[in-house]
Length: 172
Image (cartoon, rainbow, N blue to C red; front, side, top):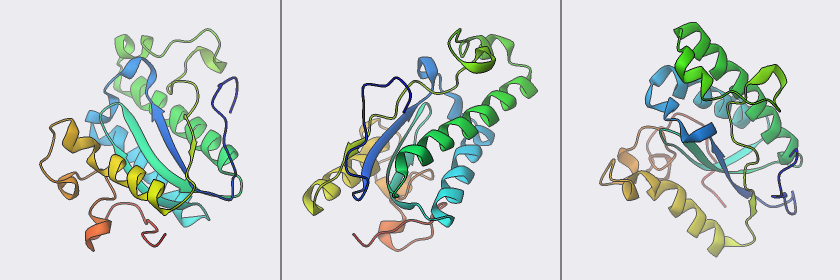
């Protein structure tokens, strides 16, 4: 992924990924912005990418995914969602907020996401369990909910047999 020092490991394995809004801006506190990310995760899941777990917080996304080309899928996901989210900010007329995403190195002068996705190759069930729990417990650690499945923007409810927002693979 670009110039990032973080590299994908064996693409035959799932990876834990983090995508963070530039300057940690809390864009996803608004549902219209969160909906763009959710729809794009759903698209990945419905088109060959295994999504094992995910949580979207106000300024970042954690997810565990697997695909033979996860590196390019992740880059495409960030590119598409970044363009959509910047367009949403422009449509809202949020020039002050939009300036927070100014980047002289980015095409068009703006970059929504911070560089890289910090991929961590998951090798084994013990590591998968630990990373899944980390993903699902993120809103609990932040004090937003008491129970992981209470967080709407997460796959924790799927792991409790309830319908979630994105199709996930809970058998690993």
